[in-house]
Image (tube, rainbow, N blue to C red; front, side, top):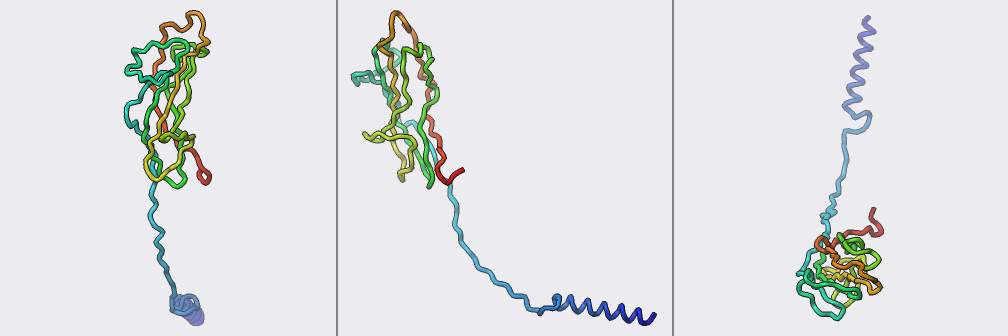
Length: 180
C-alpha cells in the first residue's frame, strides 16, 4: 500500500511540474503586435431635387404660361422642360433619370398621342443614362414631349385631357461592375 501511495505522489509531482513548465517548454512567452490604420469608410450620395418650376412650350418654342388653359389640337407638339439638381457621389456610382406617372392611356387614345421618355441635357450637351459623378452637383434638364398626332381623324379625342400632375422624376442607382 505504501508503494501505491508513493507512486501516486510521484505521479502528482510530475504532472504538477509539467504544468508549471508549460508542457515541457520554457517559461518565456514571446509575442509581437503590429498596428494598422485602415481608415474610415464613407458612403456616397444620390439625390434629385427640382431646381425651379418646369416650363411648357409649343412646337414654335413659345412659352405656355398655364398648360391647363391651353387646348391642344391634332398636330400640336408640346415640350416640358424641368431643371433637376442631381447629386451623385460614389466611386462606382451611376444612376438613371426616369419618369413615373406617365402612361399612353392617360385620357387620350394611345394611337393618337405620343409621350416621350425624358431627354436629358447638361447645359446644351445631350447626355444619356446612366449619369455618373462629376465631382459636384449637376444641373440636368429633363425634357418630355407630348404630341397630339396629326394622323388623328374625325372627332377622336375631342375634349380629352392628359393629367401630368402626378409625374415625378426619379433617380435610380444602376449596378456597375464590381457591385452585387
